[in-house]
Image (cartoon, rainbow, N blue to C red; front, side, top):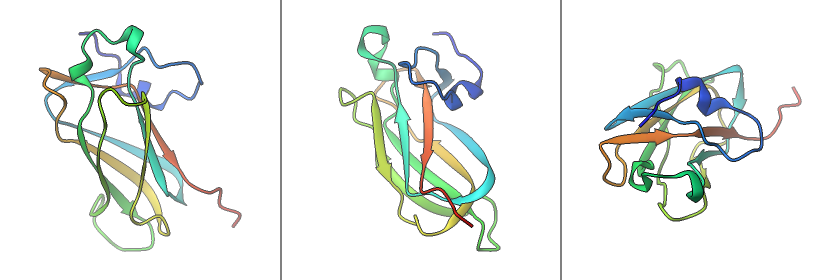
Length: 134
């Protein structure tokens, strides 16, 4: 179990992820956006099967909280999504966010558990939404 720095989840190349951020049990990863923007979906990528020596380290239940720009809310005070990453499904899985009409300045991914390993691995996180024309 080798962990790379948390920044590896932001890698933008199109090759399959083989470097992951690893942590014990549950964990949190927050991503601050350069500009507040509308977000409609998030994607989580795990290792491809040929590189995955511990499939049960894949995340399972995930909650996503947003720091909504239009509201004077506390940071990460608005839940915008809750879903389950399916082990054995596609390595890149996309999930819809409930508040896709609001602009967020940051998202926080709360990984609640995994599929039974002592540690959890996150390889890539993506934040998706339309380009703002404002």
